[in-house]
Structure formats: C-alpha cells, structure tokens
Length: 294
Image (cartoon, rainbow, N blue to C red; front, side, top):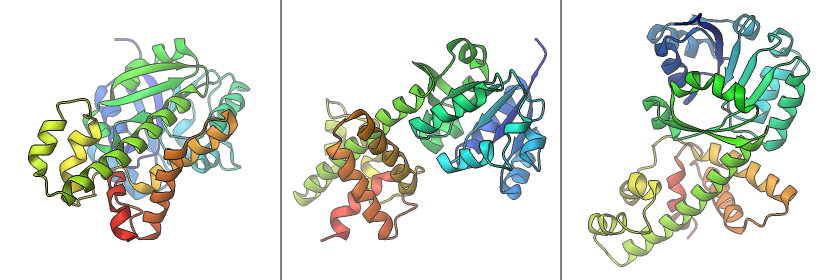
C-alpha cells in the first residue's frame, strides 16, 4: 500500500458526518475533520478515528485533498473565500472536492478562484439522502478534471456506490439540478395519486403493490408511498433543503431560458409548507399541501 494522503473533511452535518466516518474506516488516509459546531466534531471523534481540528487553518494546512459537505452557497463562500476562510491555507497543487449542492455559478467561481493556486476543483454533489450517506451508497455527480477525479475515486467510493463524470467544472451541479427537478415532479405526481386513491377508499397496500411493479414505479413510491399515506414525514431530506435546491434550479433555468412550470409550482408549495411549520419535515410532506390549504 502506498503512502497515505493527508485529507481534510469539512462539514459534519446530516450527510457529512457518516461520509467522513466511512472515509475514516477505509484506512486510506490520514484524516482531519472540522465542523463549525465543535460539539458535533467531538462526538464524531468518539466514534471514528481522525484528528479533530478547532480551525479551518488547522484542518487544511498541508492537506493533499480537501473534501467539503456543507449546506448552501453562503456556507461555501464563508469557509473558502471569506476573510476567515481556508483559501490562504490551502496547499498549492492539492485537490478540492465539494459535495455541497450549490448553484452552478458558485461552482464556476470556486473553480476559478482555486485555479489561481493550482488547486483542482471538483464539484461533486450527491444523491441518496441521509440513508445513502449512512449506508455508504450515495450517487455522486462530478464536474471538473476527469483524471483527478479518477485518481481520487477511491476516497469518494468509501461512501458511494457510483460516481458519474458529467463534464467540465459546474456540470456536477447541473446534473444534481436535473435530479432535483425530477424528484419534485415525481413527488407531486405521487402526492396527487395517493390523495385520489384515498378519496376512493382504495386499499393502499394492494394499490402500491400493484403499481410499484409497473411503469409508475419510482424510488419515491417504493420508499415513501406507505409513509405518505400514514402521514409520516420524518425521513431525512428536509423541505428547507429542497427549497434551496429548487431555487438554484429555477435561477439556472432563467439563464438557460428553460421553462420549469411544475418545478416552480412545487417550489411554491414547499415555501407554503415551511410557512405552516413544516421546514424540517421531509420532502414527501408535499402531500400535505392541499390538506393544509383547504
């Protein structure tokens, strides 16, 4: 086995916590972790092997690879390019892999900024939710330097089941936007279908068993159909994050002149649900919109 590389993992939230854990257990790297809430990092250190850092500077100094998994554009701007960010401390010639779902514009901005220090930037948002992160079976959509992605694929594979190269910088984020647009439409269709079935008193077990084996089948139907019918909405990816993601999609669609009427409608419905106290309900709570607005 070759010399272990020094890796910094930044962001131990719902997704990053188990992702960094898988990377620690892989034994491939000398791992440092940083989280803005030190209590979360301390808890992580009680479960996994890795150096807990009290500052971004400590975490990224001499790191061959920096991996980030935060919440939104503003988080990445703060931890990378702000006056207190990591940019001055990043090692020239290193690799920067960002798993945050951000806007296309931010991915391009980070790529340009990091290029000035000869740092390779790879935008690599993930899909699979909290369960995918915990089980190490995330799907990764990556944009940037293909050869560097391949060279660092073993790190990403420690918490993913597949890595898809989408093209130049920013195209990982564009692919993730397509993913979120499709999920929004699927959840709206599933919500309407289930509400229709309930109104007609169709046996839900029989119905979902029947249609899950046909053309209507989807991950959302298989994994959320029964819980939506039971009005259980505590399964990971929160509405507040979907609103953020769909906002990026809608903004990007303005630039490429794509019409997204259903995406806009679902976005508006999620904003309404947040106003009604469902900020932290999972995205399948879309089904509640009509009930709460009639």
